[in-house]
Image (cartoon, rainbow over the protein chains, first blue to last red):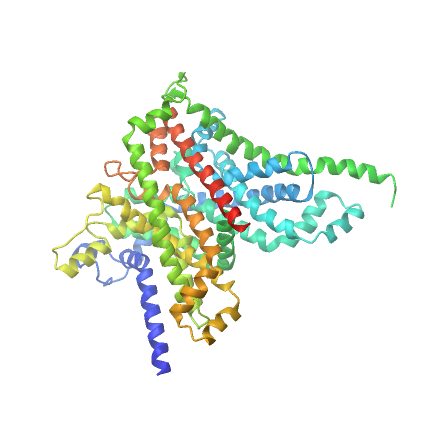
Length: 272
Length: 299
């Protein structure tokens, strides 16, 4: 009796998961088919002769976009986390005029939609000849993600016990050393959350790349994938393979850092 | 300790916060706050973006939005529909999944990961996946309908255009429910075990425990998730841009997409900026209002 119940639970859960992930499974099923099979057999049929050829073709096209995204993420995410935690340190440890004003100003950045900055930043980047330049895009990634990362790290800094810092300060340890040698090492978990969340934010960004990048060879993978799917709109098997390839790095991050993603998303929602 | 070093270090402390703040605040001011203010200025001008010629028109752009731009009205309506339905669909689903999957049984952690996984994907990928699901010729949903009905019933998600927005919301909900589940799960975890145990001993069934014990204790979490969802549903852009580009017949625009097209496709800088300002005002005022209500409730 008890066993029967257990089996029933697991069978229904598995069914639930299969239905839930059906869009992705269907994508896999389509990507493994050959072009002819697509039109001969019905949509439901499993691939008769599964082929990975589609992935090869898709990867060739998507690879440059992929490397671009990797570059943008690798450069901008450490900058975001470093700058935000510097601001968080200053605004959690020192008393000075205008402190509360600055905290409020940074709060505004979480409320405002990115759209309100699109046109003015476009005009600014244009006048500095930074359109279609990685530097321009990276600056914007930094400015858009500072607020959220600031509140994430500041919340943690405020909770750190100050005895060690005060002891170090009495010993004449310079402030920047306190920051790099004491505060940051004591905040590793929250810094990992910040890194992972910003990795996702920057990797998944679409709107900045469609506004500020027009050159194909500079597009990150989100916007590149759109170009790709337009180009192969009639080649369903290649299109689906391309979509799957773009999912892979996120899946890897997800499996490796699920704990931090869950914590970071919960934190982000609470702060919002 | 050298007594002379004290005053010097005091002096240093005065400057230290500014040294730490200089770089982040500079980037933030130049690329976030200045643009927001500049948008406000542009919204007061008529400017076609092609030349540098601008005419000051005061609030005319705002008046025009509400009086003579039917698409803007559609966009606001769609934002409201999106907000209302996202408060219902993914939140109910997320809550149900959280209750269902909140178990220490073996394998349930894996089930939870599977449900949560779509929340990690980029919205543009979600859009492409669902465009493929809805594809009238090769999409899974149509294939299923055709098989079940023997070819009699088929579904075109872009016809009529007024209904397309609902298909988009379903796609968005699929991606968002997993996150809701995770947030609710955290809420359930914070309920003391003894409370649940007491209810169990008193003979409460699963349903009774859910309605009389778990839900009331999660009031706070539910409030937070509702607020977060509300704010995010006014920011939606990527999914619509990828799936329909605001079409067919411009019927699936929201404020974010319509302002984007107005500025970058139709070069109407003034009107487009006015839309962005309206959207920003809604978001800032809404958040402050909700914050105040929550704080008042707490006192």
